[in-house]
Image 1 (cartoon, rainbow, N blue to C red):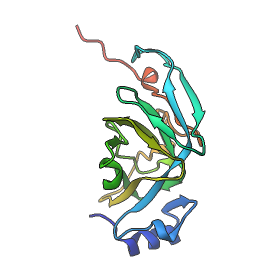
Image 2 (image 1 turned 30 degrees about the vertical axis):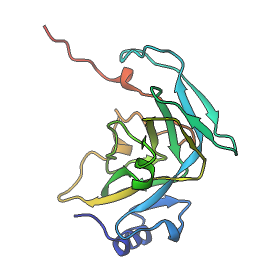
Image 3 (image 1 turned 135 degrees about the vertical axis):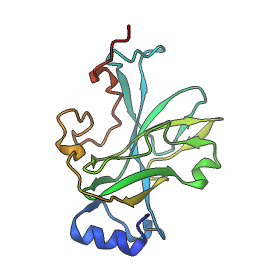
Image 4 (image 1 turned 45 degrees about the vertical axis):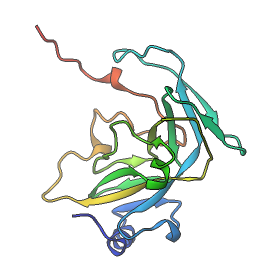
Length: 182
């Protein structure tokens, strides 16, 4: 079940959903609009290695905007910091953003119960497009969870994205255990 606007507000009042800053104008019928933060990043190396810590170069989006290029992966960040303590948050692109040829996440649209941070966006474009900090970039949808939760994200020892940040965060795949296949 997806939470309605009234249910999102009730959960915010209870503290099970936190959105900072919260703007009532960003609350939709069953979602909350998030905005592009002021930072973008790109990887320094042309070839990324899943077993290595791939470094990124972080830069601010200028007031006049920034032109995204096709065939480049940009890491962006939401302006909003969120916490979700009893629901599964999903981040989806807005249709207006999609109609500009902007994809905001490659595979990571689902958050975990216990996720507390800004959202790093994996941005790619099909053609050149100018973007601006503060522009609506996506929408959070909250799903109810049935049953008790044992493994909250923010309490897992293996959680890799728990340090609060206003900047995009590079892949931490290199911290995972790789299975040996013989």
